[in-house]
Amino acid sequence: MFIFNLFLMNNLYILSPLSQFEVVNLIGIDAPILGHLHISLTNLALYSIFIFIVVIGLHVYANNDSKLIPNKWSISLESSTASLNTMVKEQIGIQSEKYFPFIYSLFFYILIGNLISNVPYSFAVTASGVVSLGLSFTIFIGVTILALSIHGVKFFAFFIPAGTPLSLVPLLVLIELVSYLARAVSLGVRLFANIVAGHTLLKILSTYLFKLFSGNIIVAIITLIPFAIFLALIGLELAVSLIQAFVFTLLVCSYLRDAIELH
Amino acid sequence: MGHGCHGRQYDKSFQTDAIFFQALSLSYVTVDHEMLESVPMRSPQIFQLSRKQNKAVVRFHLSPSHVLTCTQPTLTTWPCTSRLCKLPLSMASRIAFGSLRAAARPRALAALPRALSARSMATNPPPPSERASEIIEKLPSSPSLVTKTGTALLGVGAAAAAISQELYVVNEESIILIASIIVFTYIGKVMREPYVQWAEGHVQRIKKILNDARAEHTGAVKERIESVGQMKDVVSITEALFALSKETAKLESETFVQQQKVTVASEVKAVLDSWVRYEQSLKEAQQADLTKSVIDKVLFSLQDEKTQKDILSSAVAEVEQLVKSKAI
Image 1: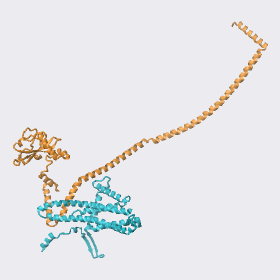
Image 2: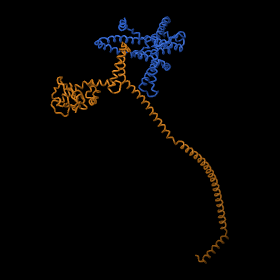
Image 3: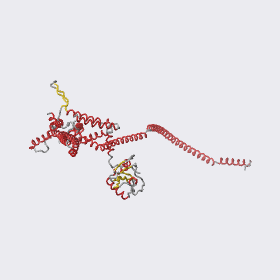
C-alpha cells in the first residue's frame, strides 16, 4: 500500500502550474490572546522584504559613495534615472518633478519584483492579484483624488468629450465612466496576467521537458531541441519583466497627466 | 627554423597522423627530408599563412597506414635542398589563397602572427588534454591537483548524496534552474563586454567634461590673476597722480598770483612811462622855449651896435692875443 502510494506520488500526482502563485504561511503566531492574535510571515511578505532589500541595496551600492565620477554600477543607475526622468517629463510635463520619485520607486519595485520572480524556486510577487490590483487600485484612487483636488467639480467634465451632442451625453458619460473605472482593473491585470502567463508557461513546459529528459537517452538528446526554445522563453520572460515594469509606470504617468490636465 | 610537431618540443618519440611545420619563406616550404623520406605524403596544405611575416605553417596529411614516429624535437630546417620537400611558389600560393579565403576576416589575419608565435595551431581547437586541464584549473582550490580532484569529487558526491537523501529533489524546477543558469550566464557573457565599454565610455566622457571644466576654470582664474596683476601699481600711481595734480593746482594758483602781479606792475609801469614821457615832452618844450628865447635875445642883442662893437673889440683883442702868443 505504501509502495502504491509512493507510486502515485511519483507518477500521478502533478502539482498545478498555478500552485507556484499560492500565498502560504511560512512562520506564524496564532495565539488565543488579544482577540485571537494571528500574525504570519507569508512567502509574499518574505519576497516583498527581499525586493525592498535588493532595491535599497542596489541603490546604496550603486551610489558609489556619492562621488561625482560614476563607476560601472552607478552609471547604470544614473542612466536608468535619466531615462525614467525623460519619460516622466514627456508624459506629465512641467510638473513632472513632483511625481518623479513616486514613478521611480514604482518602476524599481515592479522591475526588481519581476526579476526576482525569474530566479528558480522563487515566488512572483507581482503575479499576485493582491499586489498588482492593490497597486493599481491605490494608484487609481490616488489619481482620482488628485484630479478632484486640482479641478474640483470640473473634473467631471472629463467624462464628457468636447463637442458631444446633448442627447448623447448620458450615454457617453456612462461609457467614459466605465472606461475610466476600467483603468483601475486593466493596469493591475496587465501586469499580473503577463507574469502569471509567463511563469505558468515555463512551469508547464519544464514539466514536459522533465518528463522527456527522464526518458531514455535518445529522447533526452532529442529533447535538447525544445530545451533550446525553453531557453529562449526564459530570455523572453526577462524581457517581459522589464517591459511590464516600464509599461506600468508609463500608464501611471499617462493617468497622472490626465488628472492634471483633464485631456 | 620551425616548430616541432604540434608546436611542442618532445623529448620522446610520439605518434601522429598529421604533422605541422612552420617555414620562413613562401617560395619553398621545406621539411627535413630525413624525417619524411619514408613517409608517403598526401595533400600538403598551407595551414596558416602570414604574408606580412612571410611565414607559412604547412600541414601534411599522412596516410593512416604510415603512422609517423618522430624522434627529433624540431623537424624543419632552412634552407633545405631536399627535392621531396620542396613546394613551388605557385603551388604554395594557390593552396595558401584557398586557406586565406576561409580565414579572410581582417581581425583573424591581424592576429595571425601573434598566434603563430604563441601557438602554431591557432585555428585548431586545443587538444583535449589542454581543454581538460583548463576545466580542472577552473575548479576552486589551491593549484595542486589533489585538492582539485577533491573538490570535484566532493561536489559530485555532495550532489549525489543530496539527491539520494532527497535533500534535493530533481523535478521540473531543476529544468528551470539549469535553463536559467544557462540563460543568465549567456546574457552575462554577451552583455558584459559591451556594457563595460559603454560604461567606460560614459565615465571617460564625464571625466573629460569635469577635467575640461577644471582646466577652463584654472585658466580663467589665471587670466584673472594676470589681469589683476597688471593693475597692481594702480594705488601708487593714483597717489602720485593725485600729488602731482595737487602740486599742479598749487603752481597754477601761484602762476595766477604772479600773473596778477605782473599785470599790475606792467600797468604801473605803463602809467609811469606815460608820466615820464609827458614830463620829458614838457621838459623838451620848456627847453625849446628857453633856447628860442635865448636865441631871440642873442639875436636881439646882436642887433645892438654897442654889443656888436664889444664883440668886435673882444675878437680883435683875442686875435691880438693870439698873435702875441704866436699861436697863429
